[in-house]
Image (cartoon, rainbow, N blue to C red; front, side, top):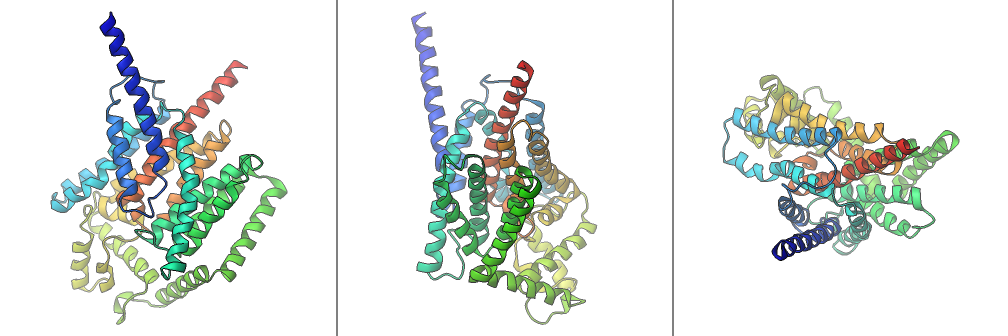
Length: 422
């Protein structure tokens, strides 16, 4: 009996320390991802390892239908990588990319653990608050002290800008519901917005705009909604006129798009294509390849070799082969995984978006966080594929999604329970 008591106490002590470790990792996760190499990936892996220690434990409420569907869809997206790789003769390159793709499978035990830790969202959001200040500081140092044309962070303007946009929007949502108690979040939000502006990432600009639109539409009505939209338009116009980094990046995009569309045959260009024009040409190339490989695509990592074949045949501009992927997550899914992979990709995005939005009346706060988050990633992915194929970006997407989705499910269940009591 004494041995049994000791064993029970040991298990209880281990569970307590594991929970504290998870909360610590969630707090640390948002902090230095745009400033230190492999920060996001390393902490994600650590959370995954911890989750394995409780994978077989029977704890907490049974998985709901909505939770099972999400986990099936994430696993299904991972399986499309396996299928496309096998269909295109798995090689060393696919083995290397497996290290990133397996993060989607790792999200399953992480979710099963996180859903039982009710304070997980609080610790993650605490880290988000500090991360907003760090992101703004990083961007300012890059531009003002290191004299970079754009704020890069440790990886790229796209990661820094998009990540800062998510931080800014989550803080805006927090302010929307708790302005009087948390007015001090205002400077933190401004810091994150500064990072977005200085990044020069047009995908981040568009994502921020659409997430702001979501907040206005979901939280306001009547004249307040139209007033807020008008204020947002004025703020955008002022930002364009007053912030040189924003104006330059927008103007360049407009010129490049006009230049590309004015050419009837882009492959006849004798000069190199500009950034935006290259994207259009890569997307045209994706459509051409899809006709040849419609089901499972060409396999992850085979983009360059296939592009070179078309370049030699003279069917696409040579600049298409200078990039490792088509700079659009939807086009990347289509060319690498085919129609099967794109379908799985879209389901993985649209299902949580549908669940967040359809249950907004039961838990408006968490629903708004979730809808804005998914919309942001969907928009970022229009001009960038790294959102889902790079280790750091995919770690952010998965860990944030796991925490917010499990939190929202818990809030919806609580609301339905209270409704049933009445």
